[in-house]
Length: 492
Image (tube, rainbow, N blue to C red; front, side, top):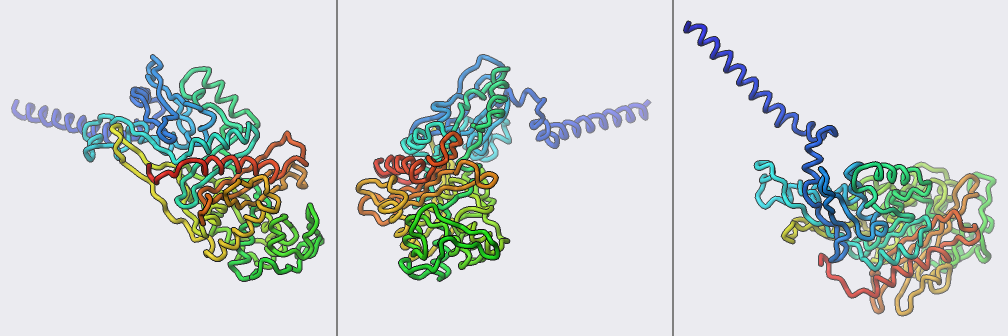
């Protein structure tokens, strides 16, 4: 009898141990997989049981939460959704999250350990913390000026504070209302399908996720490479550049839209945008120096986060002389995001320093205490201070007496560069209109804002597309809105 009792006790103990081990497996080892399982309805119910934290522009929240009365209690709401969609992205109970709603999801949902008042409190208690708020760097007036300027045309605008890297505007057009994707049901499904089927791609964030041939705006990079390498020492000297110019090793001749480019100086060639001069200049500078300079401005960087990921702006590292010549005028395989070209203008306007662009100023908890803050971080010295001064001379001549006079702002010093980028089979597509610029407040020696604008309006007549005529007025409106604002303290 005693032996049977012992055996039963041993079996019972073994079963208890097995149950305990299985509980550990389910609750600890497999907890992550269970939480990530789309079929686990309890996770979704818990996620939407409370209002989500806010995304702020200035002191105003541009997102909120609405009680649905359903099992998934709170759905996301958006104020001026299409205006801020390229910043916020969407938070959908059906399709997940994107952009800031995605990268800052833990803070906005209250699951981030950074929100805990006591270390490991969430892990110990399994209680959800109250969500935090994400304060962006966006300037509301600049954002609205950019959005209004594009007026629904396909394109994008990016604006930066050159001294800090704060992103002041990030607009993509056409846009969409993220609120239409927030909940569940057939209406949300239909809207998702409509947006994805739309050939205008309204959910594509063109400011940071789309790359374009930069056209003549890339001549800023080419001029910088020529000055930094010593290929050019005198901006006013003739360049011995024929018009037309035969691309090295080919029978293809490059021409210009206007006159006055034959042997033009770098100063005049930049001011009136001579392709022949800058193509030859790129070939003279050579592949190594051209690539090195482009990368100093941020090209070929695959790791840029603002915190949403930014598409790589490209310059090929293996090209023949003819391809280098085409790249020097922003053609061949050279492509850039609007944010990248705003970074080029910002570095020139800030004396050669390139700061890391960022979109989140700080995160606060439910009580308003700062739990995380982003500060200025130097990315590269793009060019020397002396080269930056000479590039400013070139860019300011474009606005005062060149192709970019539509960007001039009374009382301010504005530098810019127009661009009309060819694309499509045989370059038959409607050209993209580019303008990049910076503006200095009266009496200042450094720029307060840098802007890049691209317009890809397929409905416009080819002759009506130009950087100076189409994109420059949009950049001007954005720059004026920033210059008109009272000085803003960092981290305020």
